[in-house]
Length: 371
Image (cartoon, rainbow, N blue to C red; front, side, top):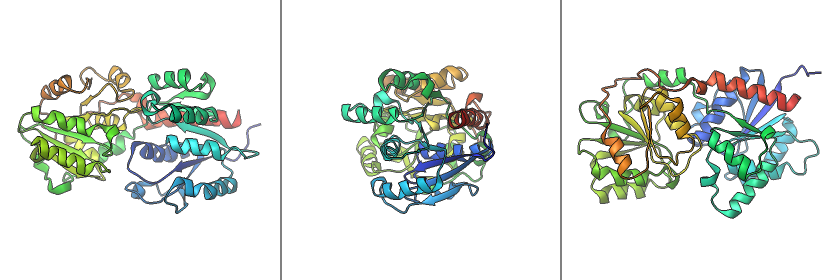
């Protein structure tokens, strides 16, 4: 007999950092409520640029610790107090910590892990690979965002079919397009609205400034671009100063603008002539999905996770997947000026619509907890 009270899902985050995994967790937590699932959030450190974006309807417990390791006792107490049916994680090291934390529980919640990166590239080290194999072995459900990711989880991490779910990354298309229409265009770093207007091409790249995202590879291409072309880099991270020095050394500092973290990247995507991904590894890059939702074409590396599958789903020409180096430079050089003053028609395949993704996940979670 199905119980009357709603299913309770507790999402675990280390902080409100501005990464894709954090954004997706917040999106899903809010969307699941509309599907009859009572979602709440526990966060190790309540700081981060996404803190203002946390939905007011979402119950949030902040543990006020700087590191996950320091927060584990408090996290265990909170789980015991809340007694959720589902524990949800979208970051690998959080998943691993939860898998170990739940070992002594006599009655534990179902552990659901959403993989954010392609395992073959993210867990190249043997030690890390073994640790994640243990973690996924303890999960009741593992969510993959692409077929390629699902195949790797089956083949190399022993995630059997009944514990595996293929779920596209969700995008709240209407909300993004509403933000993308904002006027005037955000002007980080002293930039003005005319940067993405005129005959010069405007390219946008977005993400945390870390080696994974490959901004150094993108900068190495820029001396081969037309002197009028501009690159806007949205995001912050430990690699910022090194990337700025690289731009100076390459003689392109005047054509590359490091904007830092911005609250509204979608307004930039909507006006870009193309959005660029130079990643060394990904899962299913949210930047590409959001750029398409705002009407911008995407150029990405083959290492960008399930980007090839997205290219197959999208209309021809909307997503170019090319190796870094001369092919990537040629793809950028072939881009035409769009003269976009706001979002054009969405290019995003409908399978990524928030309502579709949330309904599918809610159905699976209810079957997992109540089945």
